[in-house]
Length: 183
Image (tube, rainbow, N blue to C red; front, side):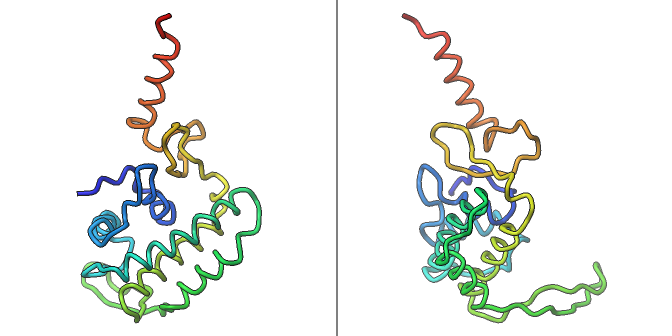
């Protein structure tokens, strides 16, 4: 069972955080299936995860990373990144569909007709596109822990670590030992 160090951020950041200092958490079908289970309710269920889904998710993630880095620093995202995200969204266009359920009544939701890999890539690319145009994108921070590469959207302006109980504790312990180092 893969342990995902940080989930619950905007979907685009959760996707980027699947590439950690320890490695790629969605490098294979098992890891991706586990990550998709963590994201239940945020994405259309895929069913069986295979190599095509892994490749699609990794392609969106690889386009999202330089796009986010550019937007965070107020620069134009690379053309290749924008092209890849646009192609992913175009691969499974969404239409809105009405549905009636006894619990919720009348609802409208996006519906995509495509093979699971293309649909998954389109949903993730759309989440990335929405986040890149969100005013909060400038607030994204990287964890300040020395060995961490995770990104987060701080709810509090003083937040410095992705997970205070993990990276934050390691940083505090390291500072303590540095101050109390024996000669």
